Length: 79
Image (cartoon, rainbow, N blue to C red; front, side, top):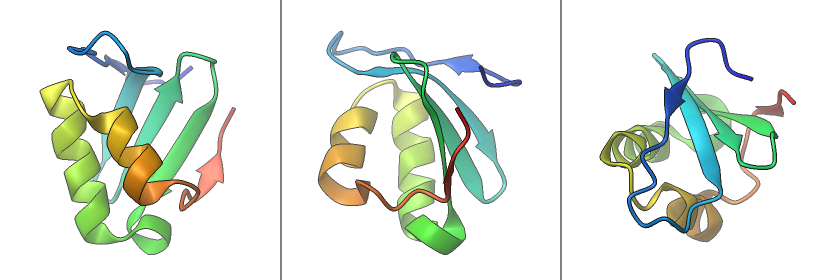
């Protein structure tokens, strides 16, 4: 599990995301499966990371955006 966890609001009630953690140049996302992936400026791109942070805070659209735009451009799988 993430250390500074922010539960994902999941306003659509359809998301596979449980929580996230935001850093200055990354976002770590914990999925409902327990898997945790880190996405960062280097591997994913600064603009996409900032959009992921925005969607995470909104509680809607994060999983869809990951699937459509980011897919496997994560920096590492942490769990």
